[in-house]
Length: 443
Image 1 (cartoon, helix red, strand yellow):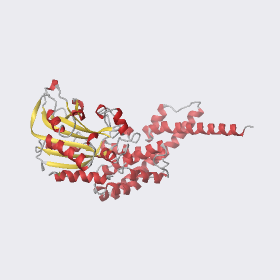
Image 2 (cartoon, rainbow, N blue to C red):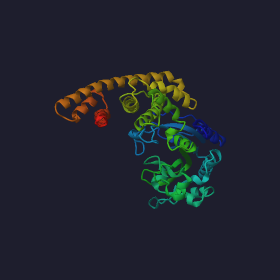
Image 3 (cartoon, rainbow, N blue to C red):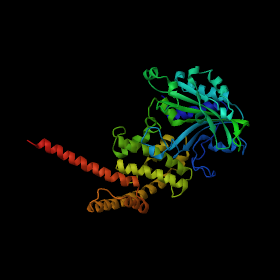
Image 4 (spheres, one colour):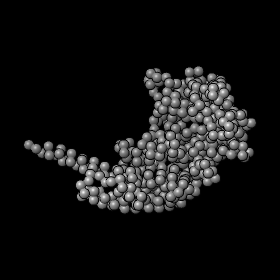
């Protein structure tokens, strides 16, 4: 079984052998683009080349790009940790061509890498192609389909609509059809019952997209019409964590060696074992995910703060601290102690982590200690508020009191909801235990 490091290295080596320049990841934090705070896709660093604002230094490029997504339809921060596939920070493997090769090579090399290098079974692979759009005057992408037919049977080549299979940078600018590669990781018994082509793009957890090949061949003009691009662009993106999960035969990204070393370190710190308690598992996944985002953001020059990108990072850090405090009993700063594990796991691919280790640890520790003081103060005030409400004959505290704790003292609203519920549950369990003991002692 290939390790995550071996998989990342194999991708770079493969495309280097095809004449691609391997470039370093751009910073995850964007400072010179007013439309973006964070790099959320591999193409961000090549945006000006694609738009024609700058000439391309290299015609062929490949990399592993660190990305951050914390909003949008499939990137809700509050989902991270509660399921096994949402992440804030992730890596995107990609290869690009700026006016050089196009569909034939992009499809052929994708197949060669997946099947010949990674040894994925061809019968588990499916490809989608753009079905066309009559209102746009666009025909089906028969060119891409013809190249796929060299590798796949026709029932493994599926039409996709404009939403899934036509990529656009924005309201105007470069755009074009795309071809997604999906893999079916179900058991043979399940495959025999339902063919994989019926589950592509149906949100099945084991029939997933692993690679998107974008063929930028049009330019969207201000009036909405399309014209051909003088220099066509290939832009591909493959989610690294998802690929590792597939190759290592896991059903969860967190069960791969991308996250397991960190989860084991967190579990040891908390005196528990991952996989034995659902709520603790959620907390450990939150921390394992968030420490990556926080550390990489700091290396890229973004410190936690109360504004813009800094606020996003502070929010992510505090979310991790809350979960550690509430479910893992971490009443002292602890996340900064996890940095050596992160460096051991990712430092070779991203040497900036080790270069800024002291700064990262210092910033995280200070942020943790500051927020833990806020939590302790808030809990004392919440205790008083709950006692006052009880004395007044109320069963719950008011929304006004909860908002005051948040607005004046920075105490998280979700903890204001959670703590009384936990205490009620503990009280209920004590009553149930006493009732059970009484029944046992009765003659």
